[in-house]
Length: 497
Image (tube, rainbow, N blue to C red):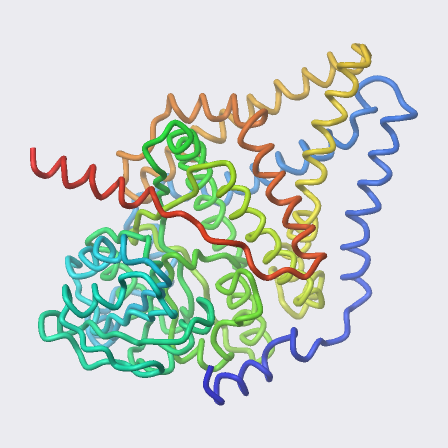
């Protein structure tokens, strides 16, 4: 990072200048742990379904969240144009859109195998970005040769940005020593001059209207400082790849419906770094991406919202349903657990750094609603795994007076999940216009089998994240990219027929 970003980060980051932690925050965070201890202990002293109080608490919490999301997201049943206008709070202004400039940063470390797919999608946009910067984070594969030979970019030397490509005038190459994604993004931010900057992972394939949708949203809403696009996961063609793609497809759908709900409650904190857009001036003001966080995009949204509240700026964070992309997702158990371990460890990092906001009225609905929910989310996987372990223990111990009522509760929860899955798919289809990546039948099957398979894997990855966080580890290993290349081959085969 350059000096100005370092100085801005020092002013705005609670990691570097921790404020006092209010008593209410301490009470909220301790309560979720104490509650777990009390409920877990009940399993050894009580009979009947109340012995499974840990599981009941988990079911109640998850059901309340589902009801909240369904209620907030019900507006997606309205026509899409009405939804967009209501969400923006402003009228469509073509002149404002025209004045708004858009740049794209592709942070890449050894991504030569998938970069052409990502760049081809960027060149095919209906609204071309004014700048596309490949932030080459010390790649040691064939990235340099690819950029030079295929795209006509001259090697600028380490720490420098190349002249534009003669073949693709918007494309430039920023060559950096390996320092991680956040540092690569910050270097590119400092070198660019567009109003809005999109971050696109090298394994993410944008749909043709994605840039136009983002540019339109930022052009007509001056208070918008960060926005998420919709992502569809793709995995490899192996059996495990298809298994994980099936479950992650519907997990992503539910997650984006949830983000829409929290957006309507003015509490959205999560954008996907694989495909997001930011108002460049706002990001520079708060110091860019924090290289010390495992989930730099998630932490940045906290810092933007914190700065906005403290300065009375009224900044907004949104999810844009018309901006869509496909992204590579883990297709094996090892890579999936590694990803979820990193995500959860980064979530815990951020929750800890911004603990003073939890329960704090100064931050409005974010402090009073969203962050207390996130406090419970820190132990949700522990609740889930404990509930499952207790159920197995009761079963093997022959305590059927407990097991049978518990199974009735689980069946009821699955029924609720079935309804929510179907409702989410219906809302997502109306919102995004995408009807090719979801099926009501497959959503039903996912809802039935998920509690006993994928959900346990997800909780296991999150629990590993607890150890990763407590041990202070920052590295999470190398992920293999197989989904996007396989997707690209399928698309090419389809177009040639």
